[in-house]
Length: 282
Ligand code: GUN
Image (tube, rainbow, N blue to C red; front, side, top):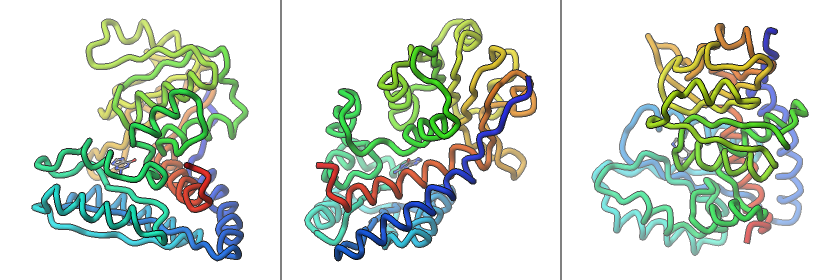
């Protein structure tokens, strides 16, 4: 078996094309979707992600601004800014790029964002709605992964999905979304005893461990779907958490890095911003 590549870059492009029409319709109703992105400090990776978000917004006609704050910004100042954006009717989406500086309490900040403008889908209200299977703003990377699976008509219901990683922004929510689609879900993490024993039973394997090439063909069942969420910089080039060339030999479908999950995350952010502007999320 040699895996079919799920090209996230192409799919994201297609979705952005469709979103242009949705944005035009909103504009005809007098609503210009607007996304405010807050970037604190000068982490180069965060800067690059934020630039990607702005560029993609511009392409589909979503108005956006990047509010850059110095690393020493106080939590109080940040909360005031979020309060102003919450009250501003011209702002539909608010995103604070993670990670934040250590002196700022991440959870306080996430909870300060109006849930109807929480285009990251990180607010406990949105997480709760997701857990109960309600329509809401979904976390972008997990939402992008489900969209990739559906784009290839991959059956999720009744399948055994194994998620490696339990972060709040990827691992936990992607497992929940797979469960919502009627998969049987196993979570693995750094304390899992005998990781391979679990991953080799996966029909759908989601790899979000944050370590280059942590997973190869030895972890994969023949015919599995392998989704690589990792973005690691090794010797100046980007690579995933999955050893692509090795895993491809066993997988039926596999996502590359780059051109895999990354562009889908941004596309889903745009989708959430449009949804927030449509006022469907509250
Ligand atoms: N940092 C890495 N991924 C994300 C994300 O999806 N949203 C935000 N706000 N920060 C991130």
